[in-house]
Length: 310
Image 1 (tube, rainbow, N blue to C red):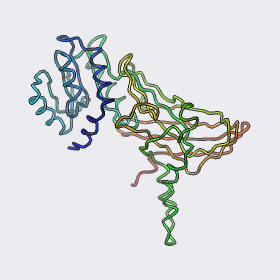
Image 2 (cartoon, helix red, strand yellow):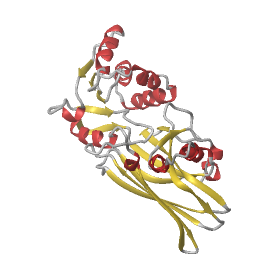
Image 3 (cartoon, one colour):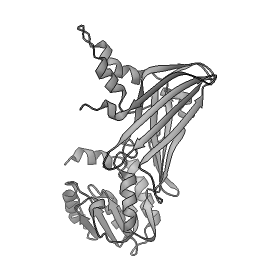
Image 4 (tube, rainbow, N blue to C red):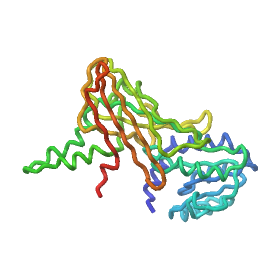
């Protein structure tokens, strides 16, 4: 089991407190029943127990479940029922009042949160509550060259060798990075929402969004930064914006093959397509173009799967 992965999550006090406050808002002591999907080492289940939930059903398919069972015993928690299986594989789940799932990644949908929560609605009693309630994704142009330069190492290998193929694969990939406001257009203030999912409703796994900017001054674009904001329950949110409190998650860098050099009044467009179907895992495609007086003067289209080594 990757205990270090779980240690990093539990060290994230911003994450932990947001979920605690969300659970506190919806749990009625002695009455509320909860399903924790992807329960890991059990923190959210244990929080629900401490807040007075009547019973909790913890679904976890990994070996982390064994540790959570031992931790429950050591902490005197007796109302958590452990199910060693992925929630989507459970034929007859117990109906509950609240579903909670912290299956978010640096890319919001990389752990199939859309698909898992869609399936889990069969767990809910009438008027049941889903946590998180809503996910929004944002995108901003990257104007700092340092992220792009990092991927150009293939040009500097030397010894008379050509690594252009490897450079092409590097461009067709996503990178977990930490952006400062200065790295982004208008210090991230001009970020655009490109996707929004209401998790209480049915959501498609294949999603497409568009964002556009009219540039006020000449600038070079080296790719795009993407992050998310998640409403857990009304009044309690959690996010990975460069301007938000730091969490164990970071932002993502979507590179370009070559920088796009823009003039004032040019229009920059990016289309993003996400596919998180279970049979796919996760794939993201991004397509950028620059328009000058209604004419496309630069274009680049990239596909995360093209960066795979097969």
